[in-house]
Image (cartoon, rainbow, N blue to C red; front, top):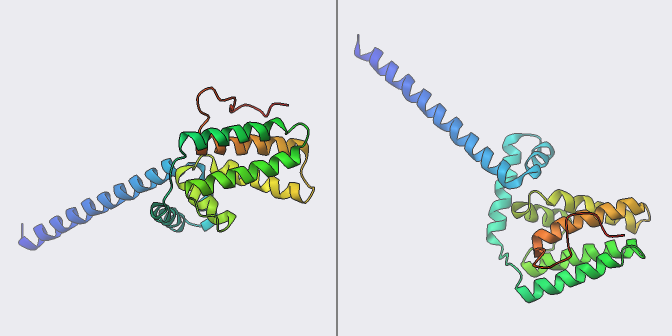
Length: 189
C-alpha cells in the first residue's frame, strides 16, 4: 500500500477517536449538570431554547455561585430559625396569609444570612439552584403563591401547599435538626 493511503487511514482513525472523545466528554458534562441541578436542568434548557445555551447558563450559574461566600448557619442561629419556623407554622390555621408572608420573609432572611445575594427573585433562584436544584422548584412555586396571596388571589389550599414547599427549602437551608418537629409532611392544621 502506498504511504498516502496509510496517512489517510491514520488521519481517519485520529478523527474518529477525537470525535468519540469529544462526544464522551460532552455527555459526561451533561450528566454532571443534570445530576447537580435536577429538574432545574430541564427547566433551564426549555427556557433558554437549546441544550448548548441552557448548559452554558447553568455553568455560568456555577461560576457565579463559586464566587459567593455561602456559609452554613451556626447551630444556635439554625435553632433560632427552626423555632421561628415552628411559630410561623403554628399560626397557619388562624392566619394563613400572614403565615405564608412570614415564611417567605424567613426563607429570604436565612438565605441572606447564609450569604446569598438578595438582588432580585430570579437571580436569587438561579443562585440557589446550584446547591438546591431539587427544591428551587418548590421555592419558585411557593413564591408565586405568595405573590398571588398579596393580591388576594390564592386559596387556602394554595397557601397550605406553598407552606409545604417553603418548608422543603427551609429544611435544606437550615436543616431539620435533632428533635425538631419539622417534617416533610403536611402543614399541621
